[in-house]
Length: 292
Length: 332
Image (spheres, each protein chain N blue to C red):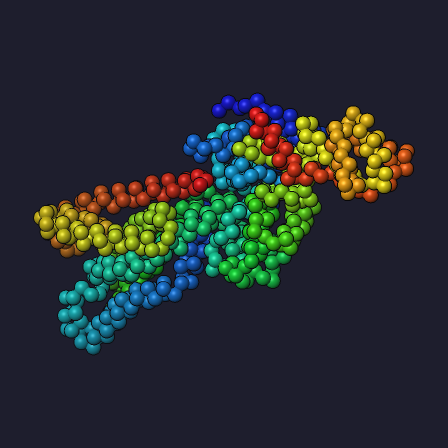
């Protein structure tokens, strides 16, 4: 029955598309994270690495102008300008990202379950899909802020300080690599953190699980690789798996001897991890219905 | 699940009936059941809510919060449907008509009250300026405009409740659903909140207020819904429900200058089930069919020239009626 026939007044507000509600969720999430001093400390740590690369690029550009031969000599090192350099930079930023996310998880996601904030979200004109996407985007935004945005800034700086702007035209694959690798990390890490934080709400257990995945498992993988003499154990390092997949976005980069085989398995492992995380997340969000 | 034949069906049927000429209900529960695994939250609930303040009363675990979450679109029923202004309760369009104030009073503690309400307005789909305007209006409505910049962490229980109300009102809903608003609030805060609820009801809002504090509902609610073990035990005005409890005669306390004479007269009436003359000089009277009794009692007082200092019902409060209703439900 139409509401008008029941005699109620119509809704007069101009409401936006429900999917746009993800944006306030992202903003709120970032606001909550950036209010903590520890996050600024970790961001500064990430910024330190960025400034180092920034200075190297600037120095290289200055030396190249002063002495072109020295500039060509510096091109032999992959600290700047090349696909490998950006890949390494983003990989190195991952350490800070890991630390930041470990602490952010309980604030961004865990708190909603622990403190009952989810009911406030779901009482609006959005449903669980919008909520989940908003939270995942908030985590992804942090990942992109630490890894992709600085890498893009370095790419821009390198191009601007080159002798001509041809650098941008000649290296579109680097741009694609930065964006692709960044988005891959953002997608996987947001799903992983979202799933874990929705089940483990408190910061300390969350950090321990996070450390287990990104510190303990790689160490375990390396040890098992030596003990079992099977390099596939290296795949226990999810961060390395992401790097191998991310490498494909950059095009023809130098690969290690056993990397193609590992990359093949990583291409199965990473989507499988994402799928499991998604299932856990959906299950947890539905489980909000259960009254204890 | 098979519904049990219930005595209280009379109560429910009577209280729920909506006159054909009256306005259609804002909210309808049609045969709603909700299970949590093997545990049943609400059981075959048929209920209609109109304008004014409806008190939702019941002990802990009676199914109040489940009923409220079903209405607020937070849960979907396993059976039946919940209709809000003609829309299914969990649809986005129905949520536009409902403002939900949950019992959870913790949220992002670092946020200011104003920012919290603004965020909720934006989540609802309002654009920047519109969201800000509505936030200010909602804060003014709950009397928090001047204190809204403080962090939620520093708020008292009453102030938190007001902020929660503000976020529920920010989209100007027709129906306001408030879960346990009086829990942990001091008497002054309770009175302020109740005044606020009355003010909202006077402005045409429909309020469903859940509570297990029964005393306040006597004065606050226009009608009540009693819940127990997941079922609606009775619903209607307190007087309607009390009148239907034939097994429980109404208890009166009468203070008169001629108490003994009055007792002698009353004991002869078939409406009166018992009269006790107390040491204080008061009469404790148990009666049936209160309407008829009060009419006859008025005539008696005028005819005999009695001076009545006090005429008070002692078991017509929400608490007393709830006890009776619960006793009846246990007999099933």
